[in-house]
Amino acid sequence: MTTKNFNDNFIRACRREKSDYIPIWFMRQAGRYQAEYRDVRKKYSLLEICRHPDVCAEVTLLPVAQLNVDAAILFSDITLPLGPMGINFDIVENVGPVIHNPVREAKDVDRILAFDPSQSLEYVGTTIELLKRELKVPLIGFVGAPFTLASYIIEGGPSKSYLKTKTFMYAQTEAWHKLMDILATEMANYLRYQVNKGAAAIQVFDSWVGSLSIEDYRDYVFPHMTKMFSLLKDLDVPLIHFGVVSGHLLPMMKDCRATVVGLDWRVRIDESWKLLNYEVAVQGNLDPAVLVAPENIVHKKTHQILEQIDRPGFIFNLGHGIMPQADGDTLKRIVDQVHEYQLKF
Ligand code: 1CP
Image (cartoon, rainbow, N blue to C red):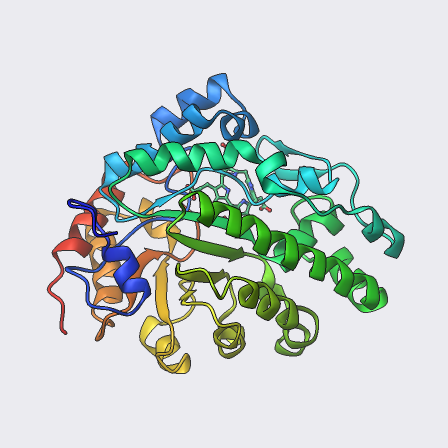
C-alpha cells in the first residue's frame, strides 16, 4: 500500500481516514456499455472470460484506464462458485444466471458441496495475481451474499417476487438455515482465497435482499451475514456490504459488522449515514439511470450527492450496476467532477 505511485484513496476512505479527494469506482464498470468489452464478448462467453486469466485481467483493467477510477473490481460473476458446489448453471444472454438443478426440497440441500477455491477456482487466483502486478489502484474481490445466491439456487434464475425462495424459507426453515450456513461458510472461504491472492478489499453483493421485511431479515438472514463477516474478521481488508432497496434494513446491516455499507439511490447519503451512527464508511448512490440523462442533469445529481458529505469515509459509486445504455464519456465526466470537488473537511 505504501508503494510509490499507488493510489490508496479508496482504502483510506473505506477506513474513514482522510483521503486526497473523494474516491470513486462504479459497480459493473466492465461491461456492455464498452465497445472493447462487446468485442471481447464476440469471442468469449462471460464464463469463458472468467476462465482465461489473461482475458479476464484485460477486461478488469479496461475501465481503470478509460475512466481513471480509484479501484478495480475483479471481472467475475456471483454465480461462479456455484459450479464447484454442485449447482449447475449457465449465464443466458439477456436473462442472467439460469440454474439447471435448483433446490426445491429439503433433501436437495444435502447435495451441495463444500469446495476448495485453490483447486476449483484456481483461475480466479491466477487472474488476481496478474492484476496485482499491473494495478496502481486497489483490487476489489467479491461474492454474492447468501440470500441473493439462495434466491438464484431456489428460483432457478432471476425472479421478481422471490416466491419460491420465500416458500422454501417459511416451509423448510431447517433446510433454509442449513443452505444459508453452507453459503455463508463457503463464500467466506472464497473471499479469504481472493484476499490471500491479492484483493485489497471485498464487496458482498446482497442485491435482492431488499425483498424481505425487517423481521424476516432478522430471522432468516442476519445470523448468516454476521457469521460470514465474523469469519473474515482477522483479514486486514475493508469489507463492503451492499444491498438494493434495503434502506429499511440499514440498522441491521450495520450490526453485520462490515467496514462499508453500500446504499442505493432510494435513500439519502446524509440521513443513512446518521442512521448508521457514522460507525461505517458509506458508498453510493447515483441512480444508474442518470447515466443516460443530459449533461447538466448528470452534473446536478452528482453534486447533490457530493454536498451531503461532511466527513471522511465516503466512496462515490452508483446505487446499482452500470446499464449497457450508459455513455462512457458521462462516466468520465462524473469521475472528474468527483475528483475535483472541494472537500468540506
Ligand atoms: O456480458 C454479459 O453477459 C453481461 C452481463 C453480466 C456481466 C457484465 C453478467 C450476467 N455478469 C457480469 C459480470 C459481473 N457480475 C460483475 C463484473 C464486475 C464489475 O462490476 O465490473 C459483477 C460484480 C457481477 C455480480 C453480479 N452478478 C450480481 C451482483 C451485482 C448486481 O448487479 O446486483 C448479480 C445479481 C449477478 C447475477 C447476474 N449475472 C449476469 C446478470 C445479467 C445478472 C443479473 C440477472 C438478474 O436480474 O437476476
